[in-house]
Length: 217
Ligand code: SF4
Image (cartoon, helix red, strand yellow):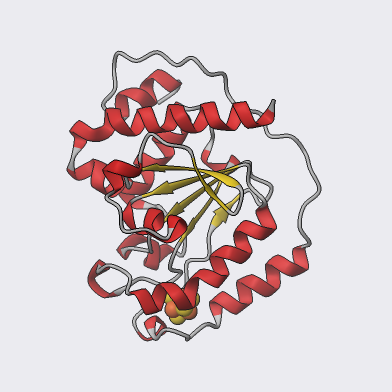
């Protein structure tokens, strides 16, 4: 694929035209390497919720630690557990395409999950696991200070908004998490199973880029 229309095609959207220009990342001072190293080691050594017993490795997060856009998903799956990186495999490829459709190279954003270890058989994270693991995510958000959060999927949306409302009702609104604008959309794994909703996800991404650009003015 060599242009953004190709990525839209990969998302199953062939007729929509992009109205936004690619987002450029300004240089800004970074959080100290030491803080990141300490946090990364804390995650790597964590046994708090017991998922260490079944993980291959922890999946810390990946991307630009000065990112304007931070994507938050659910938990590592089989491929992520194997490779130690969030959103690899087919769902990861679709997420990359979704980001490129709104002008973001994957490397320019930061991608993390609610849980840093894979739940067995990809079951939903349990509330106690979320409680024990999310201090790591909160520290990542605090270090990155993104201008926009994009929650993909029900688990991330419910945690960040402290709600049980159906994801379909949380879309198409600008929420906030600790004063950071937050947009909710479908998880790429869901979109692979339900391609008809890819166009809705693209609407959400348009709202995300609108919100990000609006907040920069
Ligand atoms: Fe620790 Fe989180 Fe892994 Fe549980 S999922 S062991 S809390 S890093």
